[in-house]
Each structure stands twice: as C-alpha cells, then as structure tokens.
Image 1 (cartoon, rainbow, N blue to C red):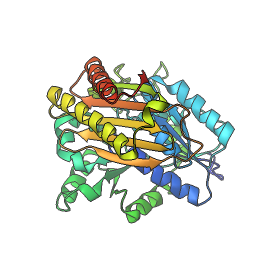
Image 2 (cartoon, rainbow, N blue to C red):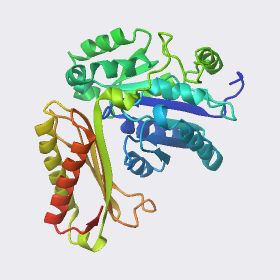
Image 3 (cartoon, rainbow, N blue to C red):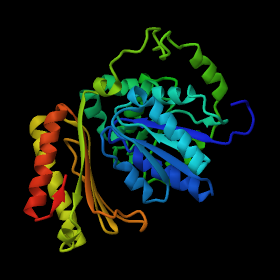
Image 4 (cartoon, rainbow, N blue to C red):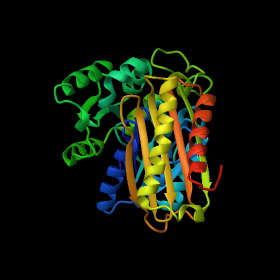
Length: 368
C-alpha cells in the first residue's frame, strides 16, 4: 500500500441472502482465471455447514469457507488466519471475499484493511449486490437492514436485471441511489456478458488504499473497535441479529448403495420434493419471507442444487457435473435455511422434518 506495484487484489462482495453473490463470484473468478491469474475465494456462510464453497470448487477455484457466523462480528481472527493461509499455500493474484448475506460488507472491508497483512495489496471498490427482482419484498421485510448494507457500498450492482421489467429498472436504480448517493450504480445479469465486463472494469480501478486506511485509523474507539459514522461506538448487536433472520444448516451423509437405484432425473425429483415440503412449511409460518434456502445433494459425479429466495418465486434448480477429483467420497446432502420471520429453532424443526420424511420415504439410508 505504498504506491508501488500491488502484488495482490482483494475484492469484498456483499449483499443480502439470495442476491446472486455466488454466481457473481464464479463469473469473476473464471474470468480472472482465463487471464492466467490465480484466484482464491473465501466464502462466509451464516451456518455451521458450508455449501457455496462446494459449488465454487467445481469451477476449479481455490475456496476456503468460514462458517458459524459473520466475519465482521465474530470471526475477525479466523478471517485473518484464513487470508494468511491462503496467501501462504496458494499465493493468489486475486482474493475475493463473499460475505454472508446478513453481514455488513463495509465492516468486513474495513477489518481486512486493519489486519496489517504482511504484503502490499490493492483493495477493490466495495461491491454490494442488490436483488432488483425482490425490490418490493426487500422494502417490506428488511428495508432498514438492506439500507445499511447499501449505505456502505462504493459500487452497487442491481442484480438479476434480466428478471426485472425494463420500466422498473430506473425506479429501482433511483431508489438505491437515494440510499447511497455516493455509490456508482450498475445493473448486473449472469446472462449478460456486457454487464459483467462493466463490473470488472469498475473493480479494476485502483482506489487509494493507503489514504482509506489512514482515515480508518482515525476512527478507532478506545477498545479498538471501529466507530460508526455518527461517532458512537459500534452496538454490541451484530448484523445477524439486526437482520431479523433465523437460520439453520445441517449435513446428512447418505449411504451410497441406497442411492445407486436412482437415475439423475429421480434424484432431481427427490431434491425438488424436499424443497416443496420446506417451502410449504416456511410459508405457513412466514407468508412474506425473504432469505435463502439452499439444498445441495452430491452423489458420485453429480451435484443437484436447488434454492429459494422469496415467498413469491418458484425454486431454482441446477445440475452440475462434478470436476472429478472434487467429488465427495461419501454422498451427502447439505442444506442452509436462512429466512425472515421464523426463529432458528423452528427452522431447524421444519428442515429436519422435511428432509428426513423424504429420505425415509425413498428408503435412502442417512446419518445426520
């Protein structure tokens, strides 16, 4: 950070649950890899079980997951250790940090900059994704929390723009700009290479990392924590509590022989049936929920992934061929459920009941 040649670029990507962060990471990572750059990705999951890292690894990108909470609230030392280990063992040109959807990405960026990493680096403009396809639901369910995430961003990407009516895009962009007048607003679609190219161009712009770090050091409280913009020390309440999201994650190991009788299409039906049961039970408790329910079944050389982000949408399903060496030695089913309006203990009951009912129904032997 001395104005010389930067050996490492660090990109922090934030955004609420289900805003498309993992897809954006894969696009960014594979792009930089195609240029011959080595890319490391750190995935922060809200729960105990990591899911996104398994998906990202299928694209040949080095991934390290941090689970059990929010980087900026409870895992500062773990994040630093992860960064140092990744640099030592992998020596990437670029590190992308995906924050959990209930984190304040600005706090994560600032914590990284205060870690005294033992190398020069360039901190890319702070990127936050805002799911424009859920604009109305976000304003209704988590307006204050989403506004806090957006207010910290330097670049806001209105994601899933291909799912938004063209007449609504200017309205959404205007609303986002009012929340953060200083941010650069762009649209982003995983189906539109031009929008990704625009994003990459923005991330490549060098910011004055040393100047930003100097400013950070001027707003440190006596206990070493960062001060909020208003001059008061940070609240002890972490961002997970502030979001109002309840969550539960778990993993089931599946007996391989009990899966062999199923075709790909039959395993897809099982995954869809589990999600259908989950969706029905969650809707009964929280009819207007927002969040992200991600279910991921790995069997042999295939990955079956299904996700749901809002009460009004249908689940999104993906079939991913395994990269071979990355396939699990023991077939497994992982799930992360994080939604508004339901306490974590109730989500746990919903998840376990739905999964175990469907697995037993199909005579799939499992160990939770």
